[in-house]
Image 1 (cartoon, rainbow, N blue to C red):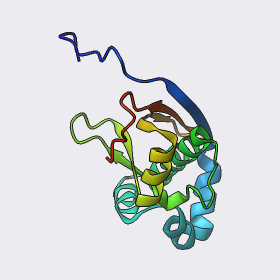
Image 2 (spheres, one colour):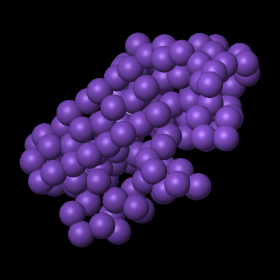
Image 3 (cartoon, helix red, strand yellow):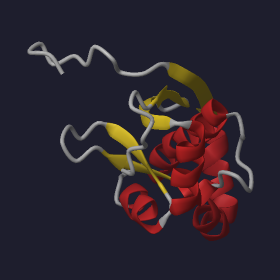
Image 4 (tube, rainbow, N blue to C red):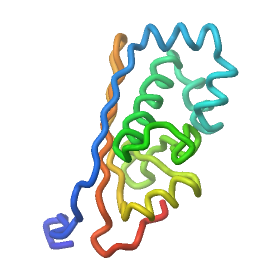
Length: 146
């Protein structure tokens, strides 16, 4: 890092992914399959957070979009290589910005691919939830096990 706070050798972008979710459709899925669906796709802390919100379906929808965007960035999609529960949407401890934390399976995939950081951005309205993920290679070829 230089004095201006920017890393002059941050690594190259090696993958991007984006996903868009219709919130009303997601709400319908939750109304019909809430327990089964949420337990298959989301980790306990994610479910607790979403259920604590006034409109949980909006928060589930945007987290779903993040997981899809990350899986697309890796080029695997949601698969045995990188499953729903291998990607956890969390708030960065320092900035409170959205971030992801990987399971051991996800960390192993990131290590094999030389990924040092995953940048995510998310947004939602009453109609849509969108997320973008950017995979950045590790400049020194060791992975960050966040």
